[in-house]
Image (cartoon, rainbow, N blue to C red):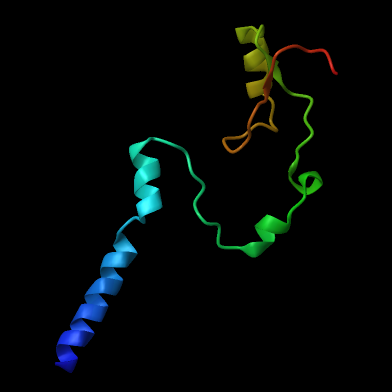
Length: 92
């Protein structure tokens, strides 16, 4: 009997480790985005001033291929960078 209980507890733990929760299954079925649980608590304590990146490089909806290539050929741009796209060049 103790061996059976131990086997059931172990198999249940392994099954739960590899199975998505009910909420995750609903989100996947409805193709809705979700954020997985982040492990480090310090991430939740960050403020916007610690996260934001100020950049003079941006594209507008009217940008040409030349504008795009100029930004991409700069040395500061790498695979992990991003280029914001805005509606117009005017600052509000």
